[in-house]
Image (cartoon, rainbow, N blue to C red; front, top):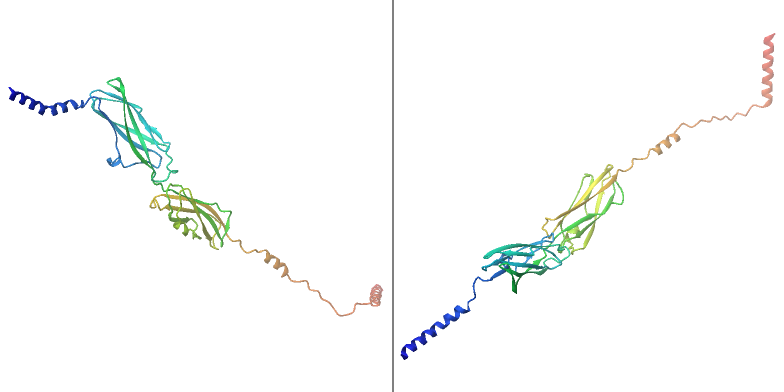
Length: 314
């Protein structure tokens, strides 16, 4: 009798751990649900990069592992005062996984330093289970990071010329390059073109390719243009193009102006006309050294003429 009792005690002792384990296990499917984010490269430390338009798309999911459908409300928190566009609530059937799309927009990427990171948060609040309001609130949160991209954007501007230039002279055009991106940059290449073959436009801009420009700042140089002495009167188009070094030359900016060249005036012929007057033959004045005839000689001549006339009448 005692031996049977001891066997029962020993058997009970061996079964106690299994019994306690069975009691401690919760219902594996009743009310279980999960919120998650599809991170870049499946790495939760990798940020979502904001586009140059100031928008970024985030996808996340909710998996309802329970036996009944659930309804959740969704809330979003975004950095940099970004706008959020996504579902506000959603019903998920039992044993279903639904993906969601969330868009953060209106982020001023040009005013925020490149590579800046800030967190965002998605909150899912359980509202109903099997179409019945939940008594005990349940919520889950998922977080990630947004990152501002590097933006390389240079803008070139040419100051309008003060007026026309003459052939055989030179003039200066002010060229200004502004960094409108959010990262330090400089001009990798500067190209100057014109449509006047007798004009030279390749001096003065060498320094632009060696100066670093901080975001929002500018640098300037003077472009020397020279019109040859034989340049005809013409309206010349001068264009300057700069390539961003930060963008490996892929980002280009151009500007152009028109410069009027006036040909040199021809020699004035008015001086020759004046010389013609001076070269006309002068009026010759002939003078005599003989004395002028007196009154007596004139009177004698008149009397002689009268006598000759009377003698002819006789």
